[in-house]
Structures are given as structure tokens and as C-alpha cells.
Image 1: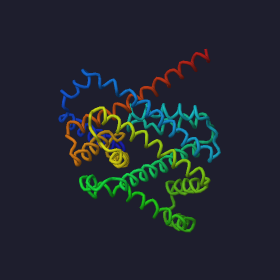
Image 2: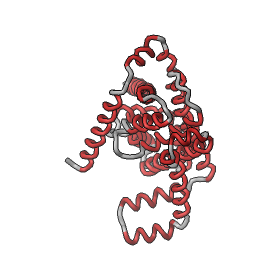
Image 3: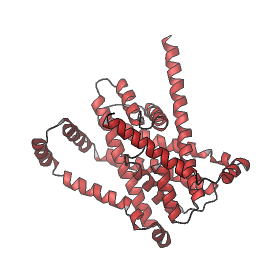
Image 4: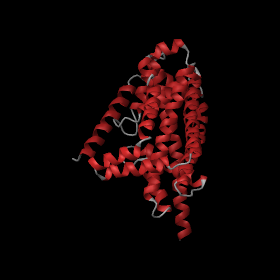
Length: 318
């Protein structure tokens, strides 16, 4: 097998192992209670809140596309994001949602593959910055008792990423000479691609960069609100300030390429963080799986939208 296949096998094995391990801690009586007393039906706002967040993410992408010379309506951007979400959740690591989004958008914009690809990379990068900023804000407003329980190793994750990004910006301020020197020593297609991406990023208007960061924080706020609301339904009294810290750390942890689409890592980190503040393992595992199922619910909406669009297009051709 190729190295790529070995990586996929490792990621799949890791995801399955972590999920199976966590399932062992589920309190099935609590699950039955959710079904019996109607609490499960109180979770319906979750997908709607996440959909609002997805609207923010779609407009974030649309702004970057516009700055790169590609016009895309808000409705089209949302459609492509919904379809990408479906593939990203249902086929993680096999056919990534971002890859599907790039392919569908590039098919609409002939000859613009490189710009579409750059737009997704820039959008995701700025999204990562937004997540780190939200996490850093959460650390600032968290009370001392919760800070001690979480520990410095958890609290420093988001601020460290923000500091690293600031250092990177300072270093790249002299990028023309730096990139020229690197190009002379390590000429290659991958480096050329990074140079092009860098040039496109720094060609964006400052207003676009700030708007994109703002939309990124609003997108992250949707996840935080869902987490806070689901915890409330489960009668877990988690302070909102804690949610501002936990969700960004969980999101940042999924950047590590050790699982399929972050499955297993996301749930494992959530259980670890909640366990540090005294949440029972069974409750933390149930909350983690409810958050994942909420993403699946939104992904199914994306799949349904894609199916309707395909059938409608086929009907028009016939």
C-alpha cells in the first residue's frame, strides 16, 4: 500500500478505537431517559443554530472569492457549503468536504481552479485564526476556579496559536526576500504553491480580512451556543465562559491529522476537558456524541439539498 493508504488505515483505526472506548462509558439508562421524557426532542434547535453558523461560513468564503475575482451568490455559496458538509461528515478522509466544494465551485468557474483552491485554503486559515482568538477571549474571562481545574496545558493552547500566528506574520513581513532565498535553495512545485498562496493572501483588502475574521467568530459562536444549550438540556450547568474555552480547543485539536475527519479526537478531547472540571464521564461522552449527531443532522440536510438539486437539474435537461 502507498503511504497515503497507510495513513488512512491508521486514521480509521484510531477513530474507531477511540469511539469504541468512549461508548463503553455511555450510561444507557440516561440515553433511555432522554428518549422517555421527551428531552431528546428539545434538541431540535441544534441543527438550526448550526445552519445559521454555516450561513456565516458560506459568506466568509464568498468574501474571499470576491477578493480573488470570483463572483458567487450567497445562496450558491451556502449550497456548496451544505453539500461539502454532507461529504465531509459522511465520507471523512475519503472525499473531504472541502475537496468537493472546490470541485463544484471550479466547475462553475472554468479556468479558476487555482483561485478557488486558494480561497478555501485562505478561508480555512483565517477561520483557524478566528477560533484561536475566541479561545483566547474565553481564557481571559474564565474564573480562577475553572482555570485551576482545566490546567495551564489546556488554557495555553489557543493563546499559543495566536502568538505563533503573530510571529508568523512578523516573519513574513520580509517574505519577498525570504521566499526568494528559499526558492533558490529548495525549488519545487510545493514551494511555488505556497508562494502563490502567500501572494493571494496578502493581496486581500484589509476590510475583507477583518470581515472574514468576524464571520469566523460568529461561525464558532454557533457551535458554542449549541454546546451550551445541549449541556443545559442534559442539566449540566456549564458556564458560558467555559464553553468559550472548551469548543475552540476541541476544534483546534481536530487539525491534527491522526483521525478521519476529527472523529474520535473531537469526542476524546471533549471528555478529557469536561472530566477535568468534574463532569461525570458518562455525561461528557453523551454530550460529545450528541454534538456529533447534531453535525450529522445538518449533513443530512446538505445531502437532501444536493439530491433535490440533482433531480431538478436532471428534470430540466429532459
